[in-house]
Structures are given as structure tokens and as C-alpha cells.
Image (cartoon, rainbow, N blue to C red):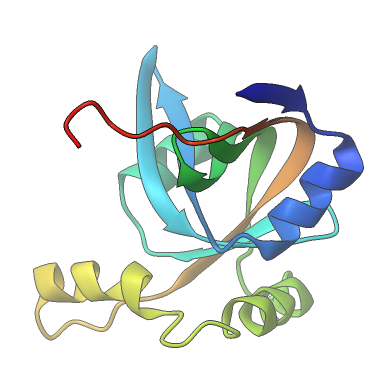
Length: 155
């Protein structure tokens, strides 16, 4: 297996195809990692969410990390780690940015469901307010492994 570092251009291409990643935030020396559906465009990740722990924590500490993987098998994978800053997109001052986020995210069927379904279950009949945010990409690194997958010992 060979592992190579990706260029910034290669990272940007892969991020542009990604729709799922892991978002890490921290507060008071405690990390918190959650899966998120996202879209990448022009140096930002756009995400639909609802009020909860990650939002509370990112409001207090906007420094975050996003990790994107593309895994074919144990010897053929790509991983990108992005460091960035959280920015909430409230109405009315971010109307244009929210519309852009929605346009990007709605390319995926039922794009809103993961963010809203769990909260709706917990709240019952209450209306859940969606929350759009973006992560400004400040730095990124990526690795790609390639090689021939070996048969497992159990086979």
C-alpha cells in the first residue's frame, strides 16, 4: 500500500463531491464528534441542523474540525481533515447565504430529514426551527492510500 499526500486542488475536488462527514467541536477541554450531512462550496461547508449540543458548543467555541472519508477497502481510501470556524446563518442578515445553503443541500433527496427528524421525535407536536450554518475552511490536509487489498485471514 502506498500513502500519498493530496494537493489542495485534489482536496477541493473531493470535498466538492462529499455529502457526509464528521464534525468535531469542543468545549472546556471536552471533544464532541457528530455525523453531519453537508455540502462544500467556495471554501465553506454548509449544514442544516437544529438547536442542540453541537450548536451550543460551537457558539461558545467556533473552532471546529471536519473529517471526510472515501473508503473503498482497507488499502484504498482517501481522508481529508479540515480546520475551520463555525458561522451561524440567522435571518434576516444572512438570507442570501441561507438560500445558497438550501440550494446546495437540496440536491440530496430528503436533505432535511436527518437534521429535523430526531428533534421532531423528541419535541412531539412542536414546530422545529431549522438552523443553517457554515464552516469557513481555514486549512486542510488530505491523504490517499492505494494498493491491492489483501484477502482477510478469516477467508
